[in-house]
Amino acid sequence: MKRVTILGATGSIGCQTVELIEAAPDRFETVALTGGRNVALLADQARRLGAKIAVTCHDDCRAELAERLAGSGIATASGDAAIAEAAAMPADLVMSAIVGAAGLVPGLAGIRQGATLALANKETMVAAGPLVLAEARAHGATLLPVDSEHSAVFQALVGEDRGAVERVILTASGGAFRDWPLERLAQATPEEAATHPNWAMGQRITIDSASMFNKALEVIEAKELFDLAPDQVEVVIHPESLIHALVGFNDGALMAHMGAPDMRHAIGYALNWPERRALPVARLDLAAQGAMTFRAPDDARYPALRLARRVMEEGGLAGAAFNAAKEAALDAFLDRRIGFMQMAQVVERVLDMMSREGALRVDSPGLDAVLEADAQARARAASIARTDHLTA
Ligand code: NAD
Ligand code: MG
Image (cartoon, rainbow, N blue to C red; front, side):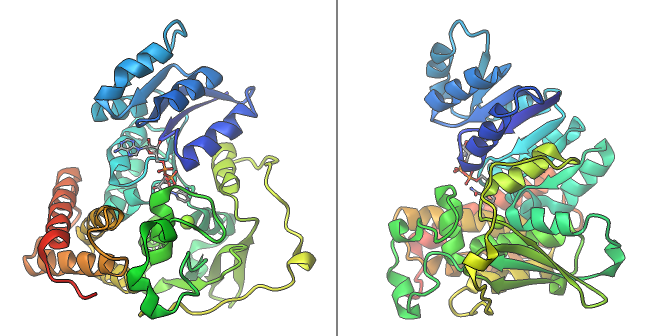
């Protein structure tokens, strides 16, 4: 039996993880489930999986969660500290599926108990890649990528000579606006941005896909996870989303990972690793598919990709600042305080400011420095979104 904890169980990745675990009750035992305001779903999941404890990050949701689980024997708790404590409960695998930098501290708690960390939360590697890898080494914890592209790279590397890797190519669907005329993007609304041509995901990552901030985070995530130089990570637009990533070797070979665009593949691969087991995902019919297409991403349409390059070159705390500024800019866009294309402007100004002050140049930053840079970048982005003159 594998003991599993799911951080962010009520989200898009979390629900699919619950579904796969529920389908294999003889192989998984659930330790802790965490969520946010959707306590009805969290309580239901906890009962279905027979979890030991259910935790909401909101203290004002605690009473309702306890009421819903009354008589079940399932413990309840609330607050950020309780989430990190749940992640520290003995488990073999912790699924890190909280959205945003909020996933970093609980993920580290999972690593520090030596559990395998299944990493859907890409923000963890963007904000604190070197720290996370060092902690994983120190505690003998394994990191398994769950982001589809990174799971694809991980799978393409099995049995390969890591020294023979020349490059990694991440595919991108291009998001909701890939075929919109460039001039129209400034007027795009949150509702329009929250639709995705191929993948069904949480609201924030869907909007990040339209702006390519998601791919920008993934480029940095790939550099950190697979120990690559910035120029070894490439992005290609692949509207069909059938190839999830490719690894290029020094003999010119490209190993591509293909499959239906369904996160249950990457989630199931991580849950079952090091084994492969049958998964309920659609099988590709290549003849019916007919063709796959590729094109280079356009810099004017996707400024986030340029910013990712800059973040990788700067290193230090640039990733933490970049991610936090992006989260705050996304909040401002969702509140209709700034336009779609202004998100990148906000993030760039935050990086400019913090870089000028030397606030990003820190070698091997610890957790406190990462959290401080995160808080600073968030506050600055919020203030820029409120007060600065941004280009329409
Ligand atoms: P989601 O918004 O659907 O779910 C987020 C989960 O985190 C929910 O359970 C929510 O209650 C919880 N949560 C939110 N804020 C929290 C906080 N401050 N503290 C504690 N818990 C909090 O998100 P998602 O789409 O499932 O994405 C989760 C993570 O996985 C993100 O990092 C995302 O980038 C990554 N990811 C998602 C997909 C996908 O298909 N959805 C694919 C690849 C990577
Ligand atoms: Mg991805």
